[in-house]
Structures are given as structure tokens and as C-alpha cells.
Image 1 (cartoon, rainbow, N blue to C red):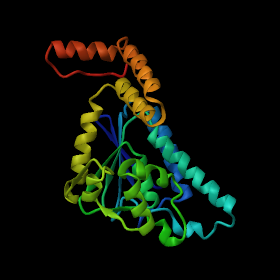
Image 2 (tube, rainbow, N blue to C red):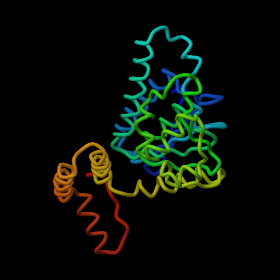
Image 3 (cartoon, rainbow, N blue to C red):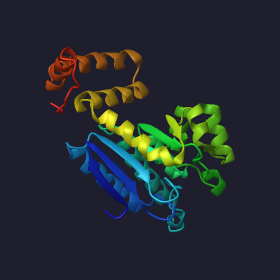
Length: 257
């Protein structure tokens, strides 16, 4: 791959986004990211994905130079829809995706981070959607995901002023799970990824499915789905192993069956 490097260890795929100098999200990057997701989903030796950027930034945004080649509103709409589809795939990915954010996650970079299930940030990172500064608007579902995390008022302030918030502030507003000094970022993110990777892949996948149902379905419909998945878990080998390990007072060893 041209823009992503993958290192797999202990059921964790450590994915480095490398497109210097700013790790901008171009159409080519989105295409490669989609292919990467195909590979990681099919790999039974990957249970958790950790995504981080190389260099100064997680991702400073979409590729602005690419914008200059767009000749019509239809082309711009297609670009937006393509980005939305790839990021929606991340949000619905059956394996947890953790974003480790340093430097900056701006515009499309923050939209990418918001599609991940968990975000760990450096305390001094900058997170924002500054598209209005360019006379445009967020196009990769940023207008819809940001208010989910920070609320309507703060999302309106961040977008309408184009002012970013720090990693520490992102935790306060619910946009990130944890903020740490930058030198500890990858260590903390990997520790979290390895902890999640020890859980049973089947129950993890079901939990992610139900978290998406929380966002999309009425309460009663979602809890019915939960009951059905709860029942299906009891026929798995992983469930038998988990119960037996508890009785024997030892760590469980799950095989995703």
C-alpha cells in the first residue's frame, strides 16, 4: 500500500497513515483505506484496529489541492458521498477501531477520527472542523457526527467559528475518551487495543452492532435485538470457554467460535 503501513501483533493491527506532510485525505487515500478495511475484516488474526498518523499530524484534513480540480457541483457531491461511505464503513466495522490522535485532526481528519469507535488524544492536539474558513462546509458527515459527541451548541460554535479545541478539551466535551501527553499516546492506545483484543471476537462484534442500534433504532426495537444476540452468544464455544475460565479462576482464551 502507498499510504498505509500495517503491523499485526497479538490480534492488533497497528495501522500507520503516512502521506506527508499533512496526511491529507485524497480520493486515492480513501480508495486505499477501503481496500485496507476489506483486508482487515477478512483477517481472523485481527481483532482490533489501531489507526494513527505519521509525522506531525493524525490528519490535517481533506486534500485542498484536489478541490481545485473539481469542475461541477455533481463532482463535489460525488466526492462527499464517497468519503461518507468509507467513513460509515469504519463506524459499522465489526472490529473495534481506535484512533490515536496527535498534532491535529482537522476537517476530514476529524471526520475520520469521529467515525472510529474510540479516540485517544494527545493533550495538546487540535481537533476541529474549519471548513467554513474556506467558504465550504464539512462533507464527510462531520455536521452529523460532531453534535452527537459534543452537543448541538458546541458543534455549532466549533463549525461556525472554525476554532479547534485541544485534546484535553475534547475529553471534557465527550469527543475523545482519554487525553495523555503526546509521548505516551501510542503506548496508551496500544495498551487499550491489546486489552480489547483479549475479549471474544463474537461478543465484541455483537456489542458494536448494538452500539450502532442505539444510534439508529427505537429503544424497544434495540433491546429486542439485544435479547436475541444475548441468546445466540450462549451457543458459542467462546461463551463456554469464558464461563469455564471464570469457574477455574484463569484468564479465558477465546477463538472466535
